[in-house]
Image (cartoon, rainbow, N blue to C red):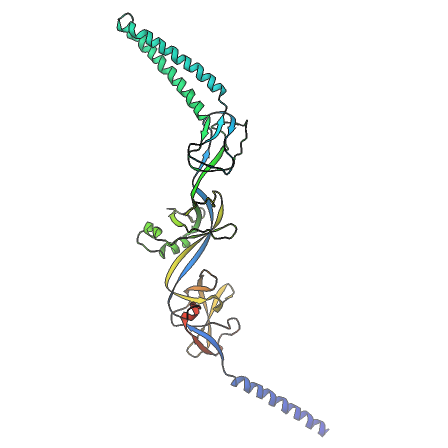
Length: 369
């Protein structure tokens, strides 16, 4: 019995010794080293993306001015045409017959005027008869000219240089000025407008960071913008923002914006879509790597080291810098704060660490030597 009690006491003593040893080692463990950066001010460029709709600088609906059946279609969909080039011809047989009859009435009225003139000059008849004949001539000419114009309108020409759109009508289709659907559209796409919308905050962010005094001067001095096509490829030429709408849409609270892109190779087409990237230069802002923060309960958290080298969690408000590697910090951090660059999500608040200071310029410009 005494032997068993001795063994039990020995085991208990050994266990307590082991626990005390581990606790002592834990307490004596030195703080772990982590890379830390002291924040400074820097310059950067933010890029915002917006979906756009493309339209030609002129996008004109082609409609018939007179009634008739389509007799000829001179062009095809997607064809490039010049100003004044015939597009469609409507049937004019009836109008041609009407024109011949009207011309005959003009000739007859002219003969009557010519016959009465010498009679009036010799005072054989009164001026009234001649004036009546002249009025009849003018009326006949007006009727004839109206029919001729109707015949001319039957040949429908392109009002601008451009590209022919969809042609929904076919030969023999009856059209008039009241037809709901246009014969086609002709788009001048030598340059292309990109239309998009921004909300009030986005509009203020863009304009307040632009150079210039007046609103229009700020627009004129804005940086060139890039267009990414629907296949994800970047369009080869940069564009320029030209206008912001003067009033927000009362339903959406958004402003309409128009940018212009050159399109000499006709790659961009009216009705297309894409994404526009708008750069905004920011000066004297705080920048941190995105991996130096984490999402926690809908908040973005950064770990800051205090004067005792202990870690403190700080919520921040940020905007992403293009490229997906950095944030601009709008609220939560100040110049001189020491931010932990690694171990975010592992280090708990209040933990003492051994800060290893890294140069700020090396952090935000990793390629700079």
